[in-house]
Length: 525
Image (tube, rainbow, N blue to C red):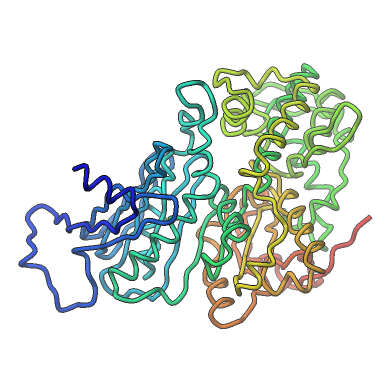
């Protein structure tokens, strides 16, 4: 055993013998499909890691049920080989699992890596199953941490931030997963993947941007939607609604918040040339919440009157966090986005956990009681301590560009969890760094989706197909066709415009018809 452990630490490849399903036997396995090999897989440990174990299992497919809070399922998954590699960083005491699923037949020759959500570093099985169903060999990693809302790994036994696990979550486990997953593909199929892709939204989107920034050779194409970039800033910033309501001692009801959004929609709906229940350019919507003062709304059978204090709260939430002197710290909740998560009865759990566990190092810290001054202090502390580790905001994508990589992103303009303008801000910084929008468009394109909530286009827009065509055929997407839901619940098919262009009505044609709109430069004040 000691000799075996020594081999692990030295990075010597570790081979795994297939674990067969109950009732199966190696003798009964069809070997005519060579070079597909789901029996023995050798993995060379990436630099700085050791391979603790490799297990290989042949799965029958069928319906895959997602684990953890997110759940979900995908049916019709074909038979696949599942290879799990457990890595550790000697001295750190971590154990990060890399799972790779490889379709037994009809592999499309591509490798797809899948990102996580909130505090989960990787996929819960649904994304892997979907990728395999579509012919991809797919991989993900748990980075040695937990599920979506599990933050028990934040602090070590001494009450200090576990920097090893935070490094895993921030960056290094995704890179190591890319290296290991590609090795597994080569071992199982007897040849390397022709193209490699990253696919993620939210935390998965942030991970994709981090790959482009720090590991530009890992992927040919990166699909990174609603990305949680600027992590150290936006996580704190999304507590701002709670700070405002705490300081003003005013908590508008959900019906009042909805009334403000409806009033803004009514005022700004026709900025794109037609009233269709969507605001195509929220940044141009300058609706003043004070116009609603005195309006009566009915909530759960009870009539309420919008007050000046209610309007002031909404103005501050939309405007975003500022210091006591008025200096902008970050962006606010987009106009039209649901207030429920960030301005509900309690702070949203994801940013609350970030501030309590990582910034204050006190998991029981009550973020609902933050004052304006305390908020500014926490915001600055988060920047100072974590920007370089997990900020994911480096605008220098020149290495990714030079490697031939393509980066594609959509972000909903009614994102209730991650301020859309943070992604726009990042894109603008890349433009300034690399010499203009036309140059950046050659490898990085951003599409903003009117009226769309956080990661809400999943399954309604084939952005991965658009990215694949861009990478493999050189056909850059000018638009992305998506199904949008307007304020009345009606589904509208629209072409999302490449930033900074916005969608505008042609003057004729049905509002539900994508051909009735075209992309134009935005008008600014």
